Length: 475
Image (cartoon, rainbow, N blue to C red):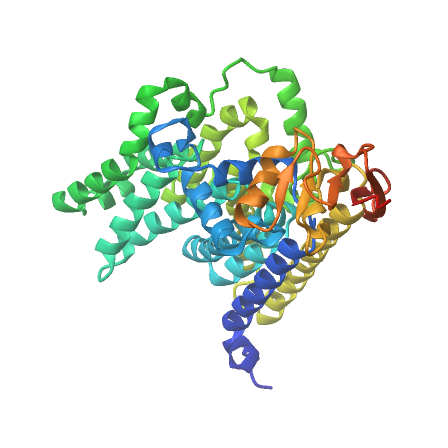
């Protein structure tokens, strides 16, 4: 009987191409689905982001509006090009989420075996946390985008020869732009601390020439000079970027909130995002990954993860609403958990191909269950959860074509003025200005000389009457 060789199978030789293709297809489908259909509307945070983006001016480079300025500029470009719609509001986040996912796959491939990178990436991109921030038209996606690409480029610099100068420039540029986003400075501090404390990283940094370091420093100074001036003019801006609140928070309340966000497996979320961020199976893999990281803490990569985690713990306790910054380190721990389990199994049967295949079967089943349950949880949570669905408005999709005048309340005026700014055919006011107009739910009232001819509704149970169409009474 001939010896069984798994490497001779056609599918085995193409396993990574097939795996990465599945990740790519799943990613594109997930982003399109999340961006267009679920939640399908915009939250109050997205409304505020649109107002902020629309009002961005050149002088904001030197003011307190410099926080998250790169994202707001992208969103303003999207509004200028495509007008105000659900898609145009979310488009910058969808693009950045796609780039973040690509970077995450490449980063995991740098840190782990290709098979682990495929499995961990599939789990990560199908979690409710990733799908939500991927379609959320706010700067939250930057917490993932900056950390992924800064770590990836930092990992590529030592192993690249031909494109090393390009990677060095990209790293310093990314690091500088990331400083406009609150808490991103901690990624830079962790990398700097790891270089100082770990001998291998100190050796790698010494390979950079003085000229490369000077060029990188000049790039950083140019890109962050507006931010420096903004902090000088308004020191509280610096505290915001560091994640230090103006008032000392209630630590007990924050710890309870964090516990719900990470370990509330039996509860139901009452905010705009489903909690806990990771399901029980993924959380167990993260816990296993933490064990293996601590066990092998002498390696440079594990050193970075440990320092990063220790650095973020106090920051998150003070800022429980900014937990998106923890997504990438948790994904790395998840990958470490998968890698540790497979490595331990392979060490038990180093020369038995049947046992090695047998060990893969439960892992594949586990990953499949986590992926399907993650998507299922996201879909049904944002479609039917009564605590979450009302937090998203579908009003933009309900405005009838040909509308010329929308009457709104004072609280809605700023957002609807943005709509009018990019759609000159629509006028916004707090009182009727034409024979036919529509009134928002909050602005509906008895208008003298007008009668209601139509009510535009949604399928929600409460406040489903979104717009009222008024027509002038003809005598």
